[in-house]
Structures are given as structure tokens and as C-alpha cells.
Image 1 (spheres, one colour):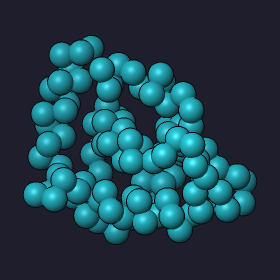
Image 2 (cartoon, rainbow, N blue to C red):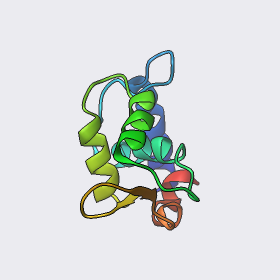
Image 3 (cartoon, helix red, strand yellow):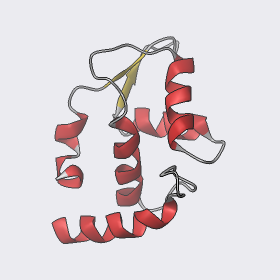
Image 4 (cartoon, one colour):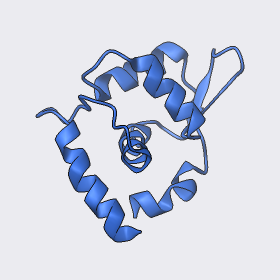
Length: 104
């Protein structure tokens, strides 16, 4: 699996602009997880965020407009937790364990 992850990581490099912002969301699951991992690493694990703050963080990491897609995917892939009403977000504590094979 490690060799495949390295291959996906190399392919994923083509999805970033010169400012290291994601220009297109990958269609393959392993590449999505790698891309979401890069965004999740920006989130302080000891802090709660508003939806606006999470959106700004995502906006700084991507070069396309679909912030909601990335936020939803981060929640579905368990990088983010949130209150039902969406008023508060946080980094899930175990996402690094969950995706340890992707982050080495």
C-alpha cells in the first residue's frame, strides 16, 4: 500500500498550483484523502471553529470555489466533527490514526 500511496502523492502534485493550493478535487478516493489530509493539517486540534472560520481555512487551501464540497467531504471522511446545526467545527481527534497509512 505504501508504494501506491507514493504513486498517488506524486500524481496529486499535479492538482496544485504554484501557491500549493488545490486547483481540482481528485476523483479517486486515495487522492481525495491525501488532499483532505493536507487541509486537515491546518486545523488546530485544540480549538473550536465557526463555519465561517473553517470556510476561510478551506478557501486558503483551494483555488476553486466549492468550499462546501470540501467541508462536507472533510466531515464525511471524519477529518472534521461538527454540531448538528453547523455552528461549531473541530478536528476529529483520531483522523491521523484513521489515515495513518496515507500520512506515513
